[in-house]
Length: 293
Length: 306
Image 1: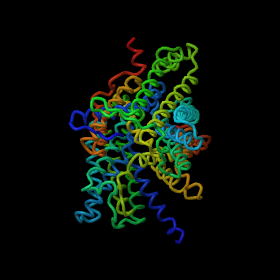
Image 2 (image 1 turned 135 degrees about the vertical axis):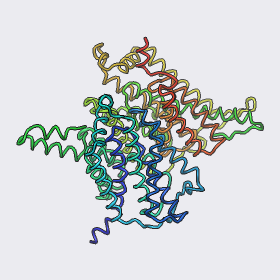
Image 3 (image 1 turned 90 degrees about the horizontal axis):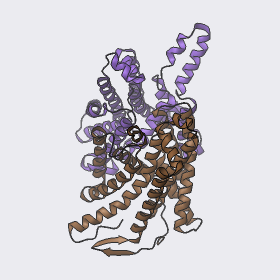
Image 4 (image 1 turned 180 degrees about the vertical axis):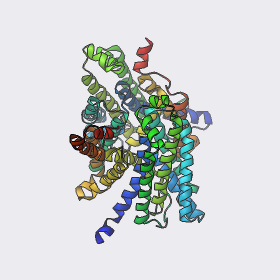
């Protein structure tokens, strides 16, 4: 039990990071090259903190509105951005993240400007965070098995083919934007009431890198991947002092190594390997099932 | 840089435009390398900001630790950043290209490389903001038609003009430049013509790095500040430059860089810097939607027209 208390801050960080990573994950699942999760996280965090602190909205309602506001932003943003592809979409979503950072700095009457919002009561504990992560994972896993998940898969692999199959690519991209925004907004809202303080720069390029990095590190095809990736990102620097001083170096080297040698990420590479072993007994179908990019 | 010192609005605006041109010239140098790498290899190299920052750091150390004059800081900063950039290509991109990695994989790899570069810079500077010794650049200011023009401004603009001219001559008037453009159009066809794409890739990364390094040293001296986090804002501006100038267009990067510098100087004078950033990135999204090809075209579209 002592062990758990000592590592509680890490566990909290893993949970919050996992939500951002899951937001990035669902975007990539739908073939979106969106890096906007950090921006949606910021919107969720500020919405929840402002509603809860300034207007005395009760916590569950504040979180609910945080998610709704993030989803609405996602939907609005998706109308123009779903028209873009590849690098263009990536650049546009990075621009979105920076717009959110700049506006949070500018409207200091509402957001507290560069010093952010401080003294937010800690109403969200580790258990709440774990429940939230489990719920979002379950949601993503179920969505994957519905027609939405299959449409996402078709679009991700080839959006021309998806179109020829009668799948409305822009409609599903809008949906993916909304889902990604909602998950990140929830993460941001929970983070605000877990870490006492939020500030604009915390939701910038650094968070964008970590969310994307966690998904790549863990794996892009099962919901476990983003969790494993985030856990490694958070815990590895904690193992030894020299490691924590060189946290970014470690994370950067891991990212390059994984994308170079295990392009599917850790979880999916393991699953693939296990499937190959199984193949020797049962045939090729099992391998083909894990080979989706 | 120099505060807009004039008594009427026209002069104030003219002064801001001049100041903006100086910053814009640095943006142009930085954006050139970013767009060149994109044009030749279709990589969004997000470690370009890290290379830029290391150029500035190397220049800083050359002056403070080795005690060499400023011009050698520029040259060594360029050389160091160029070599670092080549190393980046070898470590972060070469394997991915061999495997035909997708857009996402090269982006992630460059993000990882950027983390490493920033971390190393934090270690050597103890996360402090460093500044060049006072009076490293002789302060001399002339008044021309009410404008304040400093020696530094003239030297910066001259340096940038020289570097850009050299790069353009290299790319469009030499055999090596023709090889670079050939690889940009088609790696496969260039192989058939006896060009070694790997060598061209290393070359473009060296040039891109050297340009970024020059930009780093110049900006470090101009603002008299060098720090591990100076790369990120430049990186974000490079997005605006590559979109406005046209993905992969070298001339576009120069025009877009200058334009961005001037517009930014004017808008910071009118609005706050946070709001002007928000407007800049808002315009970026609008540009992507309304004019995704930018002002100019890259090497490959140029070839398709011919």
